[in-house]
Image (cartoon, rainbow, N blue to C red; front, side, top):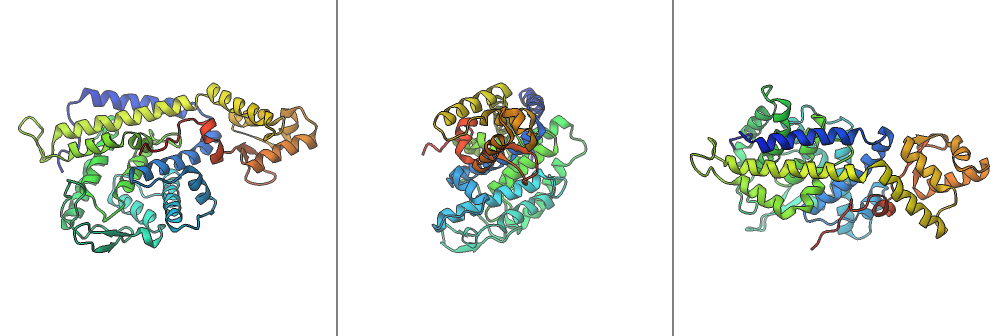
Length: 385
């Protein structure tokens, strides 16, 4: 599995530095209350793209319905909804700092697998050996006990998994790593965890949630962006770069480990560049003036079509700018008398465009799936095949 980290790459150091700078800028761009609401949206988005990477196309509206307990009658669609909900719930636990620490540990990796798999329907906890057609049950949180093959990659023997995970945790938790080297380590560990392939199934999801969690632990990841969107949009390249890093050392000039140093460097450059690209995308999407402009145009169109009451836009604008506002300010913001202003406010809450925890609590922006394409264009992109 050596080398565990790239060496001697100025390009990687530059990418890591750029990622830190852009992530910090993005974190300061959005009101914290609004950011929390966007975080729910990003978790759903992350789940959507993680599903696509696994070959599961779950529509955003179906994910939204699953979060509200509204499941399809058709078994396959229902199972995919439950899978999506499981992913979002585990990521929420990570985002709320309810997961084991540190992230680069065996305890965390086992926890992610157990928490995700125990939420799945039984039908999704079985895999089939493609050669023997034997059906094997996936046990939540249990390391793989069988030899497997993933494409052209043959992961390590099951008896060696524990030792390799120990080396994994030792390498990426080393106190000798600088902050910049830890950022690069997120990219390297993404490949190495997939290379180990510790579980019978679910390794891809565990690894992507692992990377998300470690980025958060380093103060770079946040509620506002997710790398899975970029990986899914460049899926063929993602798989190709993983395969390149799987290769054995190519000679005396290719590092000192058994695996290729050059291949690991290439994968890390791809991964960090994808992170930078996704932070930049979300930064442009959440630029305050542009976000307000998109919502205002949508609001005007919906008002003309009589799907929104007049006076809705000032309330939506305040939710974006201030993050939240008290219900008592509805009359002030709309310029209407109290009863009429309350009607506009309650209608927006009923439609899901504004949200509130209770009838007397403050109001914040809502994010129903029906408006995502208008308020946040290109956030979700359908697969091309």
